[in-house]
Image 1 (cartoon, each protein chain N blue to C red):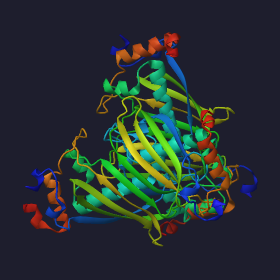
Image 2: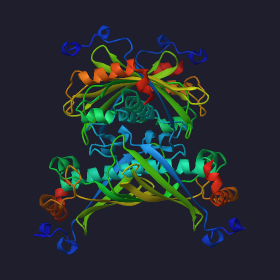
Image 3: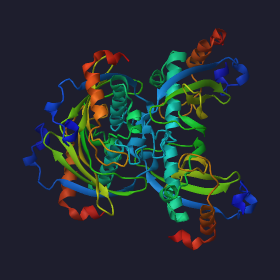
Image 4: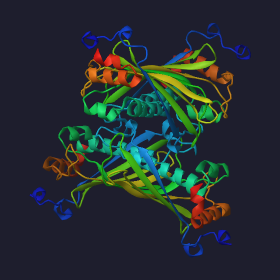
Length: 160
Length: 160
Length: 160
Length: 160
C-alpha cells in the first residue's frame, strides 16, 4: 500500500484528489491597523478559516474531528502575496484548494479577493505536515487519504 | 487548615499577601486599529503580560510552572476602563497587583499608563478561578498560598 | 431639542430605543489558547462582531458608514463574565442589545452561548462614547438618534 | 541621481547597506493555540517587532517617525518556514536584517530561535513597498536611503 512506502508518490494518487471551497467573511475592526487596512498577519488567520470550512464541507470531516482522531496538521511553510487593500467590514471571498503534495504533506492554495468587485487582496499557500498529538511526524492516515479521494471523486458529496 | 475549609476567609490570610510588579512594553503595530490607537481587546493581552511577569518575578514561579503542576487560573471576570489613547511604538507601563480574594480566587488589579508622561491608558481588573487541567474548580493549592505569603512577607525575594 | 441640552435624559428617549440582533460565528483556531478553549480577549472581538452586525442589520447603517460621516464610537468601559468553555469550531450565538445610556453614550449588552446546547459562554457589556475623528467627545448626532428611534419603532425594518 | 531613475539598481548601492538587529521577546499566552505552541500568524507579528526595533535602534528613526514623514512600508510579500515549537513564556531571539532590494523595495530577513538552546523556531522574510499615506507607491525617499547608508557605515553614499 502506498501508505507503507513512507512517501506518497503523486503518481499513486488520482489527479482528482484536489478539493476546493469558497468562504465569505467580513473584515473585523480588530483586524485593521493604523494604516486603515487589515494587518498583514490576519491573512494567515483567514487562510485558516478557509481550510476549516473546506474540510468540514468538502471532506465531510472537520479539522476538529481530525485532531480528535489523533492527526494534527501544523504549518511547516507559508507564503503570502499582498495584492490590494481590504478595509473594515469589506466582504471578502476566500477560495481554497487542497491537495496532497509529494512528501506526505498537504498543500492549501488560497486566493482572497473582494466578493463583489473581485479585486485581489491576498494570494498564497500553506504547507502542512501530518503529526501526532505531540508533534511527531506521522504518515497521512489511510482513512484520511481515502476520505480525500472519495470527496474528490464523489462530487455529490460536495453538496452536503 | 484553611485549605480544608473549602473557602478562604480573607481574615485567615495575612493582609500582606499582595504582590505588585511593574512591566514596560511597547504598543505593537499589530495592536493598533484604524482609529489609530490600540484595539480594545489588546488591553486584556497586556493585563496577561503583567500577570506573567508578576508571577515570575515576585512569586518566584512562572505561570507556566504553575500549569505544569496542574493548577490553572482561567479568567472568570474582567473589567476595563479605557482612559486615554496609546499609539504604535508608545512605551507603556503596566502596574499589576495580585491578591487572593474571598472565594478562593485570585484578583489582579492593573493600571496602564504612558511610561514617561504618566498619562492614563487603561485601568481594570481580572478575577481568576483555580482549576485543574480539565477546568474543574479546585481549591488554591497549599504550596501556592504559601508561596504568595512568603513572597509578600519577604521583600528580599523580589530581588530574585 | 434634546441634543442641544448637552445631556440625553433617558426620559426624553422613548423606552423602545433598544435594538437587538443575533449573530452566529464559529470559534477560529487562532482564537484558542493552550488551555484548549478560546483566549479571553477574543470575547471582546466577538462583542465587536455583534455590534457591527447589529448596526448594519437593525440600524440600517454600518459602523463603517458611521465613521465615514465623522462619528466614532470608542470603548470607554467593558465588562466580561466568563461562564463556560467554547472550543475550536464550536458554533456560537452572539446576542447583542444596544441602547443610548444616560450620559450621551451607547451601551451594548452581549450574551454569548453555544448555538445548539444554549450553554453560556460569556456575558458582558461595552460602553461607548461619541467622538469625532480625532477622539474629541461629541454629542450623539441627531441623525443617529433619529435612526435609532426609527429602527426601534419600526420592527418591520428589522426584517431588512 | 539614482532616486530619479525610478528603480534602484542593487549595483548602485554598496553591498554594506545592510543593517542587523537582535530582539528578545517572550511568547505570550495569547499567542498560543490549542496545539500548545504559538499560533502560526504570531510569527508575522514577531517579525514586525523585529523590524520596529531594528529601525529604532539601528536606523536611528522609528517606523512611527517614518510614517509621520509620510512614508509607509506595507508588506507586499511574506514567507515563513516553521522549524520548531515555542511555548508560552519561552524566551525567543529575533534576528533581523534589512536591505534595499532591487525594485525599490525593502527586504527583511528574519530568524527566530530559542534564546538559550538556539533551537530554531521560524525563518522567513518580508518584502515591503514604499507608499504614501494613501497607499500609492513612491520611490524610497532620499533621506531614508541616506539614513540607511549612514547607519550601515557607508557615509560616502550620503553624498550621492
